[in-house]
Image (tube, rainbow, N blue to C red; front, side, top):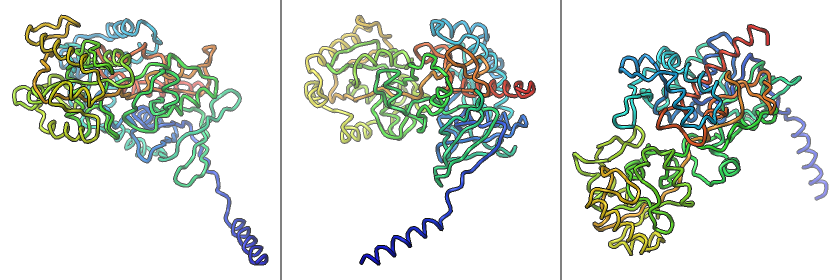
Length: 506
């Protein structure tokens, strides 16, 4: 037996010695871009087009990241806005943004972003992504800034196509893990090929961090916001770029704000109103009665269309909020000529008729995130809410509907609906986040700086890896589409600076 064990051990050792050690892969480039989302693909395509040998690293098995979910992008004074007769100027918008964010922004960076935006709209068009229209979700708004993509994922797909046709190297399932620093300068990235397990070292003179912020890193979200929120959108955005930048001495720039998208019933794989339950989730945007965990109304629900602002109010209601309505409202949404009061992104339009809502409500009852009752007492008990408070909230809203005036919070009568016709419904909702908004401190050229505002040579951060763009909330009201727009504009600005630095031998 001992001889058998000894022979097995020797054979195992011999086999182990016969298997060659995993060879590290080494690539040399001018630029390495970490993250192949909207910003990363634009940066990589721009750099490769400029003759810079570029390697693009992506954690996921597909390119595009959050760029695959983009509906539209912000700009001012674009060719489309001029054609539509939009009078808003870049300087006016810069000051509107500054005031919205109480000037807690990197003003030179924001101004540069706005200045670049119309050029980028043209550049995107020239690269085969033809905008459908320029519009606004706000009825009557003449300051149209939201340029709508032809279809989801169209921008990153076009950028990857350009990048690869120009000879760029795209490595999927290969996340950047460690920043290489030499003599105080960024000099490349160490990545890992998730398919083979091998280490991939990319030596490069310029490193561009475009990993999309930290929306899916629960520890970072709780650390910087103090809240446990539901991440939605593209997975993989776990703060990798921010972590790498900080390892080189970078500092955060107002990293708490999140792109909180309002409350929805949490359903895996669904973001905003773009999934199979979109008709149900869209009810959270219809400005109907919200109550807190005690069954009390707590804000003017008209704000739900301006979801960054509404999210601030909902944050105070605790982990869960509750949407309360009756059967009359369900029937109204399903009636031709009536339909939804508000849009939900580009997925539900104002006036669209709900066709699947009754079924989706019953599906929700089975799941446990929708509660139905023949009386208010019954639905309150099922949802775990105080029946007396809920009855008072319903009575108040019914009174406001009869008199055509909300005397509690002043909601516009267009949105006021009675809550009096059984059956009654409560939908349980939790705040969702589309992205973290700010990252590390950068210059107006997206160069990462340290605590003394000194540039870390060769290191750039863009999109949600860069900070200084937002105050405490996403600026939907005055700049629809700024998140996606900053990603692609900051990419082009960063590459312009890299080209300039290279010419100067820096």
